[in-house]
Amino acid sequence: MALTYSNPFPLGTTAPSFSLLNTVDDKMVSLDSLKGEKGTAIFFICNHCPYVIHVNEGLVKLANDYLSKGIAFIAISSNDIVHYPQDSPDKMKEQALELAYPFPYLYDETQKVAKAYDATCTPDFYLFDANLSSVYHGRLDESRPQSGIAVTGKDFREAIDLMLEGKQIKEAIPSMGCNIKWK
Image 1 (spheres, rainbow, N blue to C red):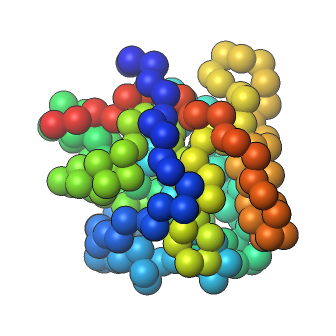
Image 2: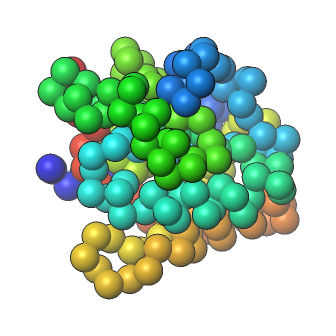
Image 3: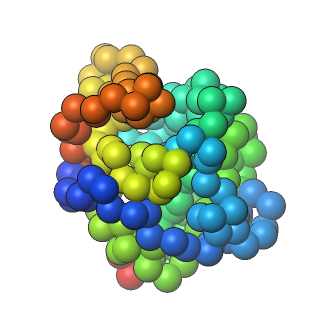
């Protein structure tokens, strides 16, 4: 595991479109079909990263708290499954069902989507407004494995709330976690 920080993603950038396999129902879905009425949260995660494992329950709670407010949530795994078979689509589906993900868990087999978003780590968090324009790219909160700090989603929640209120979002602190496992 190599500790990696998220790359800058310019605010105002339009979310790169994609069509990926939803491992939960084995159907192809597009960003346009999944986007939220008031905003869309996209996060790059995987099954085996200790940073993702640490925040998984918080991601479920976050999504459950904001889905009814018009925010869509999309999780994407872009890891190389040859060297990391625990991140394969069948294992992704198992995890999504076990943790009751209230969002699709998409598999980026070619890694083109991760590259389009300049994603570098898991977890890597993005927030887009109703027009799919980037308004936030940063950490979920200050909690890390073994930090003793509870996962609250404070930073990401604040960004969503400010976006919904039409207010300026403060500069984000980069996310950090395991590097995406490139082919």
